[in-house]
Length: 589
Image (cartoon, rainbow, N blue to C red; front, side, top):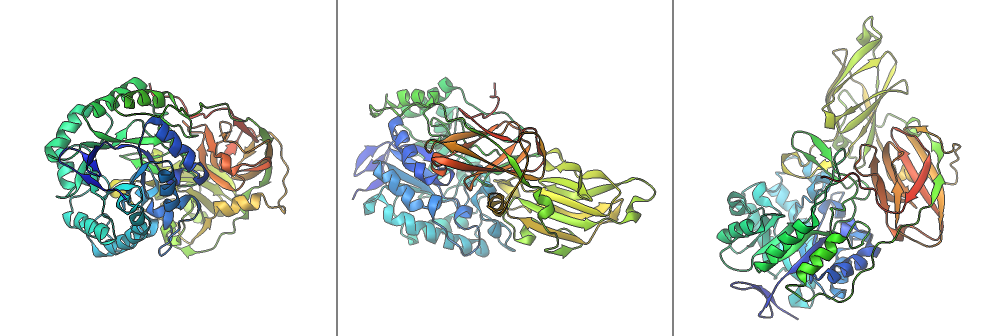
């Protein structure tokens, strides 16, 4: 057993100075059968530590549940880090941001009456206590002073940018210690005086989060943390993308120079991200600083290890820098090779919206996703249209208080338009008819600040021709079940390789000689969701920048493989094509 402590100037491992050279890998963004590979590649970069957040909402989507199966097996992940001879840092939040759905907080928690998020309010703290009890039951036995590899645990996450409730931080510390954590505790904030003051407590070791101006930021951090090691525990080496934007990259030479500056100053680091991974299924977060911007499926982050686990130009530049300050392994990871490029015609299995029977609930004001207890991405809303609302005209104005986040409107099953929250759209002229259907997609929950936990769906009252439109039914749609039905032997479909109007479910098969990582080309499709062999790859959207979806090799198989596409709008070519390398979009200049 070893002892890891904080000294006057350095981290100390069994009393000797120790520089933490860490990289962030989120176990919940990587297929579990690929954890060992990504960890090993990080070690070959020259790192000695792996850091991860813990995503509360992934483990507990429903109150009272705690899931550590498959890709949520935090203990297995930490053991994989140890097997590679590396230490670990755990950041359980409970809030993590991370461009992750709802900042990692469960929807049931953020919907709970009276729960004041990220505060010492008792209702909220009671739930946090149960969460931390579950997390530390996994982490505490794996601490370095018990023969494991966990050397640091973080309290909250950039709390100084959100609040200043010292009683809350103190309670997190008390719980953490009471639940068996004995390693040093840290905080992280951007090195701004007010954030550093608000986000920490005496006895917690402050660290910084930044990606540039390292000398200046370290100086500010030192003013507020007079002793102990300097640490940038989020060295931002890249950035994330959102739909409708560009693919963000950072200049390799500039990023390497900032890393060099940090290491030359004697600082410890955690590279955020060393390997970003993927927002599989519906796990992406969203930005909203006046305009709602949902985050894309890829979390490549322009990291040194790309989304498929390959070393990039940045990997080798960072490795050269690290080699100036610490030994690096002689071995190098293999370079990326072109992925297989099969293709498959897609048959139309169903125009599935018409198969969703409305009427699971009824109200004068449409129920939100939360009101329905729905954790999925789609809800179908239906209401009868009153002919009197149209007067003598052929159309009437349909107006919503708010649409979260995008809605397709149908009258008598015919599509008449789309409203997007990102464009601040709330009104649409609709033609005369008897039945209104509104299909709403929740595109990702904002992952920071006051919009945490906001409701999704049709929000507030709806008017038609200036009069209240009531009598709503709302029907949740289960995408996983829809995908399963699409590959059921009982389903049959025609079609070919031409265009197809949505909403529509399509299925195809393709053959592989052996399991392999793939990149599914979505450029000819509109907007929707894709699955391979039942594994939910995530969202695609013609809006870009992302034009392909990463398919982890472990979900494929030798021989026949299934691909399912749930298209919301329309595709110009009903073919599943795979490309040799990822298409993440035009880069930021």
